[in-house]
Length: 418
RNA sequence: GUGGAUGUAGCUCAGGUGGUUAGAGUGCCAGGUUGUGGCCCUGGAGGUCGUGGGUUCGAUCCCCAUCAUCCACCCCA
Picture (spheres, chains in turn blue, purple):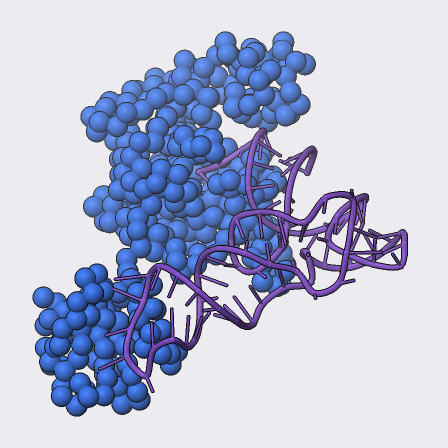
């Protein structure tokens, strides 16, 4: 128990931390090119932020939040998603008074949801994502999608399926809700229990039901896309045009609803077909009313969140996980205490010259030092020993070819750098 | 939250219907080579048999509970 990580959490151990660093670096690189700057927000926020932002009828808020009272009696919640905190920071930092759009990103931000862990689902996971404020044109929706696809492409998984939908604005959605409820009402007794519960609160989520019985009955349900108001329909058409211009293939899936209440108009998912089933690697959309809902000036927003653990998992399943770099370029073996002193000096010189270098710290035999050097992946090994030390030379062994040469002490770095 | 499977060495797994000091492979450490890695040989360390109860003369094995992991659902990244 003492040595066991809490349920649904994972350590990143030395052997795999480079994978995270690579993904994070990729995200940094892409964000730099697209003009997105990083924001870092607290891991916990006032519970109220998520109740108002994410929506108090959503599953995420109703049953999955890590909520507790702090010692001052305030109700706080570990972030269950990335957007609300960034919106709060946007408002608190008064970024709305700076030139808009304000393009932000976050990288490996921890996210917490209290649910039962299984493949690709954890209680603590990490997301990278972007949020853009003050850009109402669909070109920004397309840019955000394009950025997500670029990160995936650079991570070796360019073949993921993009699906998009529009869920309209509050005005056209109200009209749609009426039509949908009129359609659903007669069959209400035949729908599953969860769907009956959703009928009043959020009828659109019924379309997302996975029950075969419900799905079958819903095939002829009215589609949101047919009820979009003129402006929402235009926006969706424009988005399709921009995606086509960027050569980003997509499918339209009118059942995508998303589980967070703040979305308006564009919603999208990037789904990976894996041996373990379909996994959503990335989800996002537009939230034109959220900033205002949280007390700010009316400001459109659009963004996405991508699961880092899922991205890594998909890389594994596709066999495209990057290889780790060798720990050392050169390993220094020493024999005797005098050689060890010289070894310490040499290793520091090597490191100052930008070479990854180390020597034995476990006071082991030469044989064991070689074994360790071999396992660390070092391509070169330097041997420092008594009589050569006195002659001012070292043995340089190439581990790949097993050839050994004598090199003057002063020439080592030049020789190693070729 | 609902349903199912599984917990034996760091890892992958053996341990006929309960019986004495719980094994293998691999990994780790050391020796064989008192100055040299990969291959080979030898040795060593490492296990509260997930945990707690119960049945029994006796439990890794049977029963109950609990915890954890994995899987499906719900939901989502």
